[in-house]
Length: 131
Image 1 (cartoon, rainbow, N blue to C red):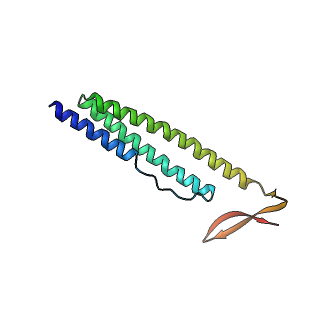
Image 2 (cartoon, rainbow, N blue to C red):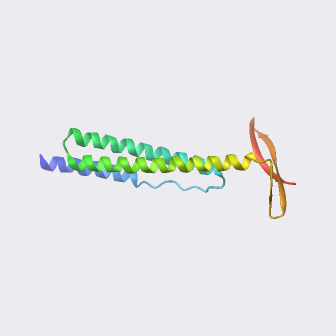
Image 3 (cartoon, one colour):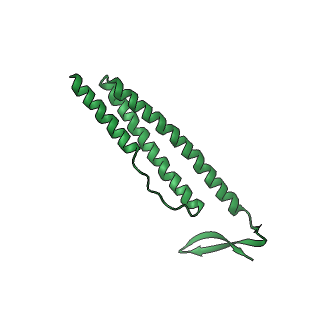
């Protein structure tokens, strides 16, 4: 019976650590919209890992297995911490993007740029063009 509990605990830890260590697809962050989208994806991944850690904690509590309970709780708490960090980071990215496009013009390196509205495929976009 003790061997069965130990194996179940090890399997839960392996499952949680395997999903936590999955490589995140790297993509070029050419603009802040891509950065915000990437941050949303990592936020979702951390949320899902927190849910998995909570499920492992519940499983450990039901089976009276302290190893699985502790591993699941630690994984859930760490995932929630990272989720909150990514949430705040995404908010900063979105605010910076809004502030940049809130201006109608700016000067950089001796050049004057003016905001123009562009419509492509029925969607409205802003871009800055040199004047």
